[in-house]
Image 1 (cartoon, rainbow, N blue to C red):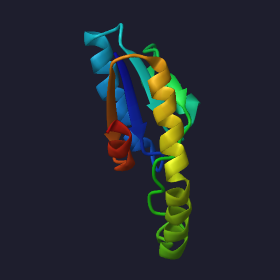
Image 2 (image 1 turned 30 degrees about the horizontal axis):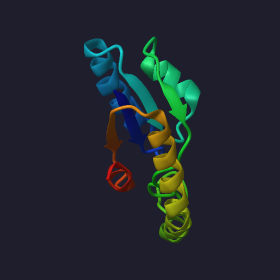
Image 3 (image 1 turned 120 degrees about the horizontal axis):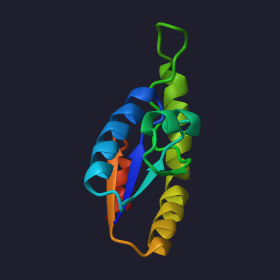
Image 4 (image 1 turned 90 degrees about the vertical axis):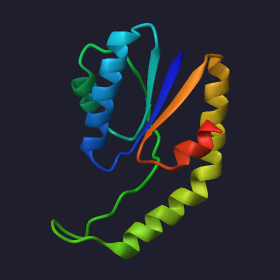
Length: 122
């Protein structure tokens, strides 16, 4: 079984939460293959997952809210980043779908926030 987790990269909380869930799953099914699709740094993921083996596929699924400064958001920059991401989305989905099909394994797609993961799972 291949567990493909699409994880938001706009904060370490999403990665930490997924690491907790997949670490528990690994204890139950250590033979399952864990793949994290996220722009989060691999060094952070290695720390969060400890000895649990996983593969990292750097992939941006969402943009979050871009900050103007330490306390304020930047709605215009956020919208522009989201529009750029949405323009890239069809190619991204096609590439990830092709990679997943090449794996020839039963598949479960998980997501911590990114709604585009639902399109990938179809």
